[in-house]
Length: 475
Image (cartoon, rainbow, N blue to C red):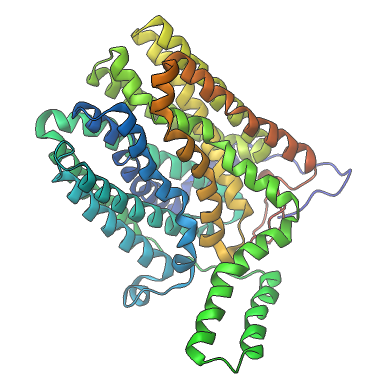
């Protein structure tokens, strides 16, 4: 990847045909299936679970508190160094580092879903919460391993397409775990729905078994950082060998990834981290109360499944595909800015719908705009985060980014039910729009701060280089 010199003209943009050709890569199919496996558990401990709890008569405040289960996704950075460095006994030898962790996490999710299926929220809400946390923990661990596989399996110039394939699979899973689960509940109750979801984790398992383990190289500047571990081991030769090995492992797995990130970006690293943390606050916070809002407004489960589920999924996939095409042509930061503006402003349509009532046409307009904006935004955002990572610490650094991506939204979203109780749905969605404004301002700042960084569209080779919004080096 090349960096654009100060004052020089940017290289020509890729044609639409060149942008589309990347989707013919075989690894895109594997990415789609792994994206399905990553997306399937999410709604089952989030929106679909809130529908189950709502029908069971659980209070709205308790439903809001239940969304804190999702904070597990936001603290996965705490155990990501283990996923990055620890070799699983036997599984590593057979499947490799990334795939062995993916398979173990998938089995954990399936087991947790089975536990949820046989728990009654009316009589044992605490037990349901325990199994939901187990599902979230397995799902978050799977995300760490899949994200590392995705970044290492394809060069920088294909990351937007990999992100679009991931979003396509992820959204297909959301359709299955959302609308699909509601349809299954009609015939087999919630137990049957969650057992079916556990079985569908097999899609990701097959993809992990059929895909290839990526060969990740280590950038030259990272080698010098790892040399610090060797220096530590030499300076502390007097320590007992087990203690010295443990400390050396911690430095290499935990300390070096963060030192590397701040060393590459300096003071701007704090701005980048703030931007990452705030980018998805608006849609995550809104999502906590979306399904209860539809139900309380008067829409039927079938209408919600058809429009918010199926039709919304189509619009999200369309937005993801558009984002995957726009990023190589116009650069990731421009698409990120457009996504941030759209993601915040479309919340105002929900406020309008709260005022006009349960009209199908208004639901279609709102769902269309919201999901189209979300697809564009998340595809650009995944590509942006992928470009920030150093392949020597892929899992740990990306887990840091994706944890920050959801932590503020999950924390604020936990109080969503209380906000609705206090001000009503119309003002709640105005509030959600307002908390999306800081992300727009930070995106503008980063775009102006780094106007001459190389764009993802300029990635015409696989050599290390800089990317938009932070100048990260990747191999």
